[in-house]
Length: 123
Picture 1 (cartoon, rainbow, N blue to C red):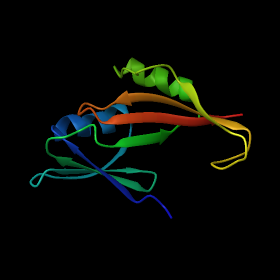
Picture 2 (picture 1 turned 90 degrees about the horizontal axis):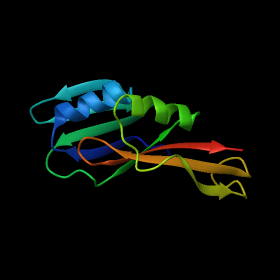
Picture 3 (picture 1 turned 90 degrees about the vertical axis):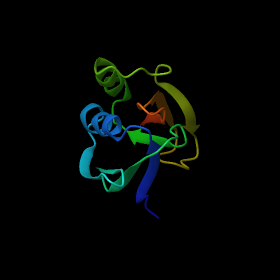
């Protein structure tokens, strides 16, 4: 099974479009306004932002090979993280990847309050 699309409500489509395109570097696909939809592609996974109240109702996890460098890059663009990258889970038996690696994450929010995270694995 492959993740195909994620959808999130955002109160400001323009702010969401600028953040995901200009700050995170996601590939912009299309905007349909009306009815208030913006699409991005993240390596084959489609993300749909729809205009509406809400936010904070989903979590998107973005893979990165170098979490520390990516955090520094995003902080330079004004992103505020809730904390430094930290270990979340040591995968002793290889359930999610190579056995013995540790999954690391760093959390932040988009302009609508949706929780986002950077994730990587370290030996």
